[in-house]
Length: 238
Image (cartoon, rainbow, N blue to C red; front, side):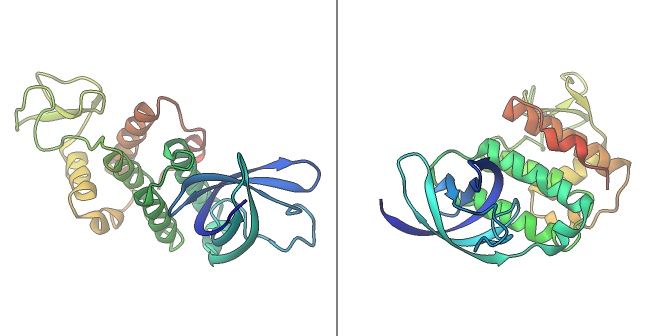
């Protein structure tokens, strides 16, 4: 087995035997990896709370045939605010679940790693109503499914854009409409998120428009993933 170092974010964990856990990470350079943390469930474990979901750690691991082995883990980001606040933690759980579904085993995707890390760091400061839907839309764009927003995805018309359907490619005009109804204000926010105005979008106060964008983005990412996100049902608006 070869020894290597990585930076990784814990997506989820599950028990192995009486004292160990399997930790699923998304890493900066190796994509998604699964690794055994030996003795981590013991009260005197050397890993402490450094290998819990949302943890961002500098890792040393041995590479195995199927499962790697964690030998060192040093915290980089503690995300204490997320762990102390149920509302923030449920939002973080949605980000982790979506990332887990997109990340591929041992296939590098540094863009995905940095997208998740940036979202968690923002969330730890107490992010606003649009952080989760913004993450979903950025994730779609990263994976090559950026929705068309400037013209109807059906006929190319640039006026009277009233619907959104990621299966059709993005926004739709009144003649081509299908999927979900979309207000002009929601379209404005979609543009902010995807066209360089993310900071302004994250400052948007919770409102019917942010709830509309949340619904559109959640439907879009679940269409892309071909499954519902279990964690999404736990998140309260705002």
